[in-house]
Image (cartoon, rainbow, N blue to C red; front, side, top):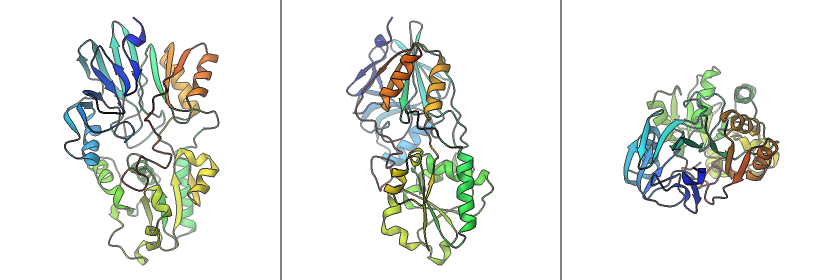
Length: 345
């Protein structure tokens, strides 16, 4: 059996014809398996959606109760037979509820990673390495120049700034699903116990994380506060809000942006960021290449990101590799979402 007999790229995304489903389809389909709730992977209008409970909950928060015709929650490690294929969800380490999806038929296993990272994150289950014959990997940061900083060191840099400029309000631009909650959790782990303030676009998802047992400490909405009350505070907001009149409610705001793209100085200048924080929820070049090698897969399919560089690297290691060239997957860290300025930040 060939890998293409199990999964095949289509204009709607990766499709398993024998199982009657798509993985992270870019347009409405009859049955969708969703790796995580970021908007470039999780869309509305599908007939049926299978995902982890957290992903389903987050999709409801973002899209409303009727985002799909029907839903089915799948636990990590649980195997489900869909017609001629068996699928299993495994932790991806990207955000809360994120999953890799393993598809097996006739002894051949293909793993679709979705987005992933192989470094620690206090807000989600850690990445689980799944041996496979074919590995479908993302390539958001698929260039050798991208080697992410240690997240704890970036948080230490932020806390040093908070102590140094105690009279200023620190505004941290971060994606509303995953990144914002990770930054807050890392702040708590580093010993920051003061209330953390939230832009309105951050509230529902952040409170959901807290209700799922993620230790985020005291959280307060920005709305209803006075300018003097916000002196010396830390606030999480959409990256687009850093350039809006909204920032004028803060005393001497000092802007930060938590993203893997802050490795590129031009990106920091684009947002007028004073304090770039290189914190990413995607694997960097070393993470991507190490993961590919560790899966033992003899064939690698590369999707959304710097596909060509990673395909070339695979070729130098004797691995068969191909870019999928599927249109419709963006990078939530690049401007942080489909709706720059809205909930997607």
